[in-house]
Image (cartoon, rainbow, N blue to C red; front, side, top):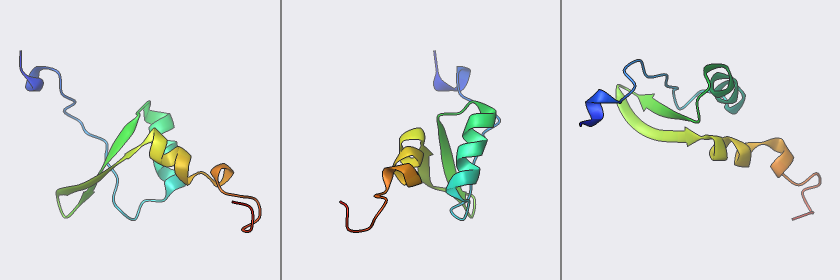
Amino acid sequence: MAVKDFMTRKVVYISPDTTIAHAADLMRDQGLHRLPVIENDKLVGLVTEGTIAEASPSKQPVYPSMK
């Protein structure tokens, strides 16, 4: 067996300028757990559910002095 037999052929991807909110919506709507980040036809990164969770405002302190 080869990867080509199991890989996703219609890849959903985002650009580096995509907002976190849009990436999260795209993941939810498409049932995805990760999104490749493409710039100038090259893979430049990967965003995961964990990355989105860490960027979530609920993970940030309510007051800047609270760390």
